[in-house]
Image 1 (cartoon, one colour):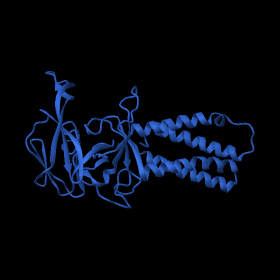
Image 2 (cartoon, rainbow, N blue to C red; image 1 turned 60 degrees about the horizontal axis):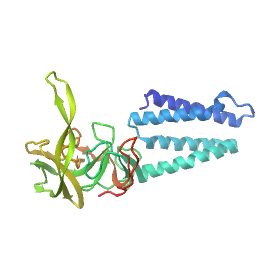
Image 3 (tube, rainbow, N blue to C red; image 1 turned 30 degrees about the horizontal axis):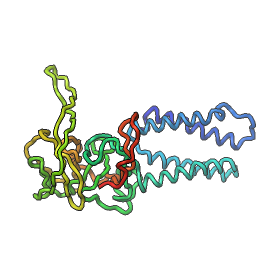
Image 4 (cartoon, helix red, strand yellow; image 1 turned 90 degrees about the vertical axis):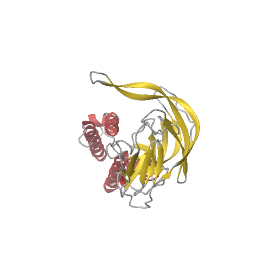
Amino acid sequence: MITDPLFILGIFGMTICLITWIRFSISEKTTEPFVIKYLSSISFISGIALLLSIFYNSGDLGLVLLAGVVISLIVLVIGYYLNNAEIISSSRGYLIPILLIFVLRTFLYEPYQIPSGSMEPQLKKGDFLLVNKFAYGIKINRIGIPKMFKTDPEYGDPVVLIPPHNPVPYIKRLIGKPGDVIRIINKKLYINGEVVERVKFDTENIVIKQPYMYPDGNIVTREMEAVGDLYIEKHGEAEYKIRITRGRNEQFPQEWTVPEGHYFVMGDNRDNSNDSTRDVGFVPRENFFGRADYIFMTWECWTCMPSFKKAGKIK
């Protein structure tokens, strides 16, 4: 991310604004230079460039907030050193809100929007969640072993993680712990030889996306109608809804043994999820950065109205 032109532009703009503002604040000039006149506009454009760089490169906003806290603190110290009331007042105004946001987001809760339908039927695309950042221990970076209050994920937890093959966060259901033997036979899940209990409660018509290859080798994605069977699955202390799609991914028995320090995760939409049964593979312990505890809003598209009907604790 640090080599991204947008990131470099944002940092450069913010640095110029900060240095110019400090120099003007301690000078005796009454005429504002060009940069000071347009300081707000330059800062705004630089901030937008930084945010776009973070989103495009799946960067961690927590590190940017930490940098903001450090810079604000340095400017505050400079203000006290120069005995400049304007610098002290302005730096306090930035430091306090940035510090509060950093603490809340890094150590308590972080918002997360579900980007796909892999956790249907319970969690749908567009749901905004609150991710409990202290559920598995405290750490600043998304990837890394917690240094304080470390606890391990439990069976059935809706975990938010960074997959080994992709820097974009995923949400999945924790199915297997280190040493577990996972088997899928006739779309039934077995853990260490014991079938995971599930009870069917409904059936629904759904639309799925299916890749199709033309004779010339061109591959396109088609939408197809299908039937999904809905179950209540009980794993450990957790109970949650899953969907099994009829006629989808019919396969021979599969088996995985979870290595030490890794976990096995699956989507609740079992036949339409990129998880440990596919590209994600086993997930290292350090790649978990939180547990999804609450839904606070659903916003399916930019032209849709946000909904709060589903707001509440996630099972």
